[in-house]
Length: 420
View (tube, rainbow, N blue to C red):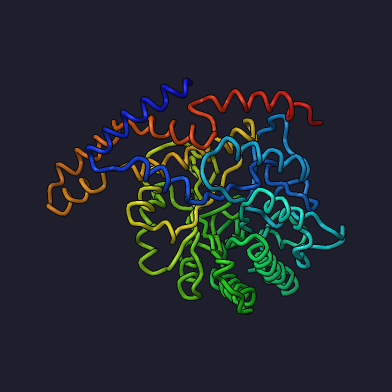
């Protein structure tokens, strides 16, 4: 697209927004500064590097699109390509299973930052931060679907130590990279069918988590989140770390609560929960995903719920209280393209939240003029946000419109298609 035309169209849009009291330049500046943490596991179907050749523990990936990254060099190459086509400030969200073990015999209960130093050096070179996740799945030390809530004391000890080690590694990430490392705890523990005892597994989970967090580490450097889930594969009837359990733990132990877009009943949305839980918690973590009837982790698209979620953050000035991370994995399409689409849509929704005529909406609401509020909500959809988005992408050198796809196809042809 012609750059002069993009600028000309943007200037017209800027004037239109100015008449509504919206500063488009300020909106762009704010939108690109919010960090979005992209998930490393989209690039290799959640397999990781620590020895697992298949997934278990409530995790499944479908599809076999050619070009999957199989090692650190390929995965970081793909991540960098996706980042180059995605405007705004980014971080990388890393799972513990992506360790590059200095000792092949070392297991997850003994990982140290040495097993992640290539990631640290790579992130330092790109001047980005790292977030982190213990990997409580796809491992022979699981007790069926159980980890921290297992009735087997040895099993619990293994996974408690893994959780403890991940906090220590996160501290190292934060200190070396000068950026807080958000650590998210999600455990797949649960039963396929209705259990006779629902209380004891939760008592064991509570004790295990307390043991993990017993050491008083600086959680300004490692904000720790607990993620709930409605159900998982093989745990359809009973999930130990349910919403009530996880929210209660976060509230009582001063942790973050992770709201994942796919982890609730199909009639629930996380946009409706953000301002509610932030009445009681200092900060939360969002996992932005797209459920299709269940927690299927589809690529984030630009839909009403994504926009409502970003509106909640921006309208309520929660930018410093909400950490945003993506959580989807799709092996049926080009994996780098999946990242780019999800990242661009998330950033576009943030921009559009800053472009909303919020003063007019709130003035109408405060006056009890709900007719005008609805009219402005609908009129907002017709404002020239796309022109502002195109200008933002031009400024960031991230590809205007669909032009990024041509670059991605070239990358697929020259790089991904040559992989064994």
